[in-house]
Amino acid sequence: MLRFLFRRILMMIPVLLGVSFVVFFMSYFTPGDPAVMILGDMATQEDIQMMHEQLKLDEPFLVQYVNYVKNIVTKGDFGTSYTTKQPVLDELLVRFPNTFKLAGLSVILSVIIGITVGIVSATRQYSILDNVATAISFIGVSMPNFWQGMMLIIVFSVWLGWLPPSGFSTPMHWILPAVTIGTSSAAQIMRMTRSSMLEVIRQDYIRTARAKGQSERIVIWRHALKNALIPIITVVGLSFGRLLGGAVLTESIFSIAGIGKLMVDAINMRNYPLVQGGVLFIAIVMSVVNLIVDVLYAYVDPRIRTQFTTNSIRKKIRLGEVGDE
Image (cartoon, rainbow, N blue to C red; front, side, top):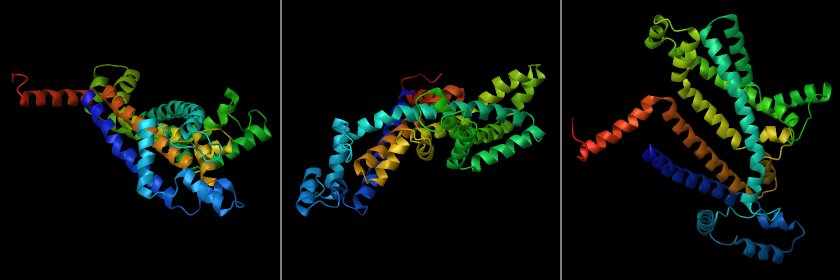
């Protein structure tokens, strides 16, 4: 398992380098002068030239990129924001707790709803409940988050006055954003749970468990669900990683000071260091989430753990460290 983790961590390096190169390339060749954006339209040519020298914008592309990567690796320096003059990493870390909280609440809500409804739909296939749940899941998947968020604000904030329309400071503020994102993710998890459970409950070992007299609850929750978790974990992990990257539209609609809204503001103001650092930060978060998902596979499915153990024993046998018994 340690060797597997080490391999996965090494695989993250070229991915992050590729992401950083693409983002830096696009920022470098995007029309517009960052010095003009910082100094304003009334700046003189001398001021612009001095700003170029200060930001080292006159250096060749590869030199700027190598220096950028070197500063990240050696100093943890993602650059300095053009607008606030603060380190990019500090700006991201200040906003990240709100995004993490929003992603966590949304995923918890989506997992509870999605897995529960998916199991019920699979065990009662083609029933009225199954048809209704499937129709609702299609609506949830196809409904845009920004439209759903605005409708929730109109109904529960403007008409009924039950919940605040913006902000993220109290539990009352958490409800509408979490429901906006959680329901769409719940629809995806529900569909994956239903399809995975339908495949598993038709297996021979499920019929054997029922023939042995085990209750339907034990058969479903202990035998069927455990073997159907791999694709479900994949969907949950992707949803969580995507939300940690910033729910851009939802954070903008509800005025949440998260990474998504920060990135939108940075793009509008052509704050290139913040855009580059934000995208790279999101890529790191996604890579870590994928690594955690891969580790969960081994804990959920014993066959994966056995595969690692078997491969290790076979290698030792080839090297003569273990006798061939």
